[in-house]
Image 1: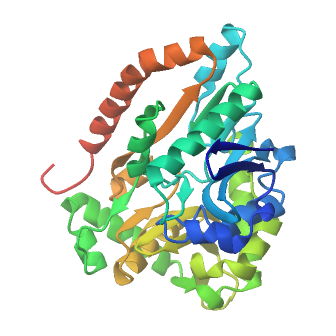
Image 2 (image 1 turned 120 degrees about the vertical axis):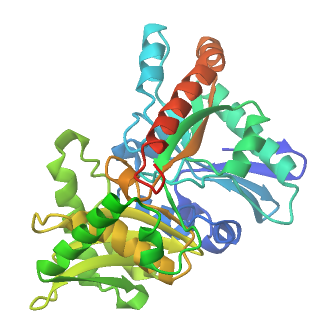
Image 3 (image 1 turned 180 degrees about the vertical axis):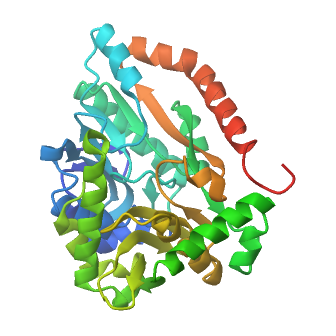
Length: 390
């Protein structure tokens, strides 16, 4: 389905990213700080059967063309549920039900299953960004109205892009993640020095316990990552998810891990714990890196070893990050353990627009109250961090 939102530009909706040439898409995506909007990552989500219609993620990507040149793109999905988003909008779905409004399907812009800030429209650098953004919003509005879509939602958005979209009428909903920032650290000891004496002792004890158990931590990158390690990473990921039952969030298939080994391992870092007599890791975390950013995604182990999780998911990545010039480390969803290890509550935002007038009126009326409550929660969390001087 195509139509011209502005002269010389044509908007096209595609049902799989394979319909867009990789070189065209990545010309727009590779300059961005986030790795999660690159063609290969999104393609493997679809090809592996992870983000597909049968799983409730119908790809519905917006592309904007000037002739045969791609000048704008937005990875988007029609969703029949809210799982895999990590922004919990069930209260809006319940409200819609009470009003007799069909909340689903909804149109969603995010990198599937990836609660990491950075989503935005992909726009060619030679184009007028404001003009292309308006054209893409017009295309989205038209698509949703014609197809009776209740609302459009963008999650974990890029802060600069958020302001542009807010000026186009999208409401901002405040959330928080737990993100580590490099405060000019030159060593792991510099990182330790920000904590009070009690927490420094705790972290040293947690690090030592893994060594005492006869394990060594290794960071494995690029071509050193084998197919066998990716298969083992899936095993650990699946096992970790299964332990949490209904809440386990097991969305990715084994095929996804095999595909990213083939042509995306240049972005990967595995933090693995080995014993001296076994080449198979006892436990492992899976991270992606791009530029000066590091993102933790998945983890698991074949034994329940005290503090192995903290070492594989926090301490080893921080140590590697300091040595490799990483300035920001987002370890993934959740926060109960992170906030005591140097990951303060850090704001992120989602953007929302409802096309049902009653839902939109309620959103605009109450979202600032919701955001004020979230800000108070963040302030309380950060006032309780185990840092020096507190």
